[in-house]
Length: 473
Image: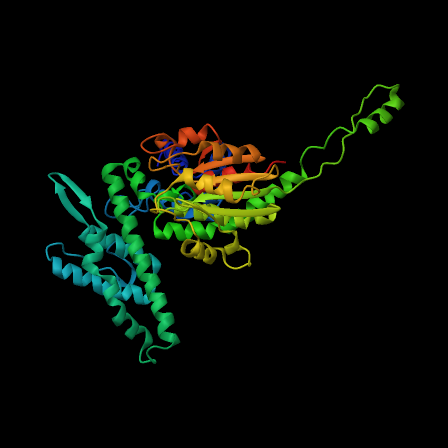
């Protein structure tokens, strides 16, 4: 590849990483170019490792990096030539593991590939598995979707080969007469399942590569790369993404707790000590050249969380409550109130030191948060909160309200909210809806935003940014 083309590809690749959410600075981009000068550019894995060392700062970002790297620095071009113009050798692997495929006989091709897949899965040869995936996509993955234009599909390959149906035969070959159902079978099944999963991933990667060649990398990367987990909207997260977000709550809390503790310790000095300042000025003829301040006394504020747990925003409220309780050591007291169309204090579910996820499940089942029809009623909930717990919010309290501010066209009860905000040291409203939707339909975000600062908080990245600034120094 010419030097100019290499530079252009590097610039485009870094832009793609940034577009996917990876924070790649200019310095890190330059570090990657310097690393390219000392590695063997003909060794693709060296290039991958050099780029990853320079631009990937968090382990969860590595899958996104690898997927984009495979698109911008593909392992092959066309049916067999690698990205640097070398013959790849598909169909000519060592020891004859990949035989010549005759496209004229589709059934024979499928059976041949299944036999080869069985042999490669038994051997566990990762490179042979990659080559077989490429050969399978070349033989089975393409279709003429339009005159003169081909498309590539993963499901055509996996449906034709059905690698999961090989499991029984593979187990029999691996165990070779050993006892069925024991530990040996469990280990063998797990090993074969992982190899089959790798093959499926290689097939998907090969299909993406061929699509990128035909339609352009820029067009394919938009759909090929999943959003980073911290950029996934709470309200649109899948079940797997919700589980991953929950796993990230406590590492996030530990990191933020460390930052918040250091932030308070490094806070500015306290109030001016007039007496000591005047006394010190006597040595300079009464001119106060040096001011002396009283020691700064960091304090732990109290936190009151008032959250909408109706179906539309329950996942968002749960994540934020999880984070608040993971950070509870940073607060003198944490109280949580949940509501749908009425309000109930749910702090009791978190007081016994048990698992917070179990406490959230209990809260959903046992809390008295439905009064009339189970649809969000912010106005009535605010009134109940102010009447039943008037002492909850004090000048030491940071008040945190969570919800989308969609009131089902019911009364807003702005005076009750205004009273709580007035008594709080700080008050914030986190809204998981995109800002452009605020004020549309039954959204009262604009009206409530006049009373309390309303902050867009759609994903974990925005939640982290907010929490870092939550505690005053």
